[in-house]
Length: 198
Image (tube, rainbow, N blue to C red; front, top):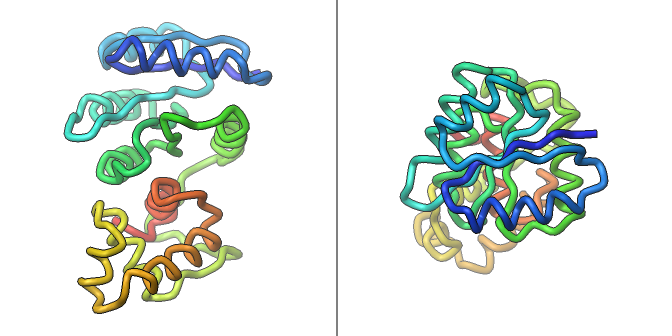
């Protein structure tokens, strides 16, 4: 059974995620806080198995809460949640040590899979770690992934690489498959975890 601590400034976001998490069979207890200060205080009293921290485009509060928590409690298991196209926040959170990312509208099966994957990953590979046994991306796929991590659209990546948007989409589908990612957000998160983008 997994205890979960949710941190987000918006009550509606906390309540919505709380309702979804309550329907996940493996979750035993859920607590919610509305700020980074509350998060540090609550986690310091009783560490949760997983901490879910909300991110918002152009706001740094979620990233800062992630950074502060992991600076004091480096073994904390953090998953950030937010908009799937907010790659800047995802990248910043992963760089701070978050272990994964969930979309706002993640389904119950996706949440179950994310929790299982995160809790069974003992550590985050550093950029210098070899990615043995994992499908290697081609140089072109890495270029596309880097563009995604910078928030570029397929069209913008194509212009930069002098390739058509359809060709970029083809490279994107291939790198999604190799990384086991469902979408751009998850691909960027996995890319940061594996040290493929910085």
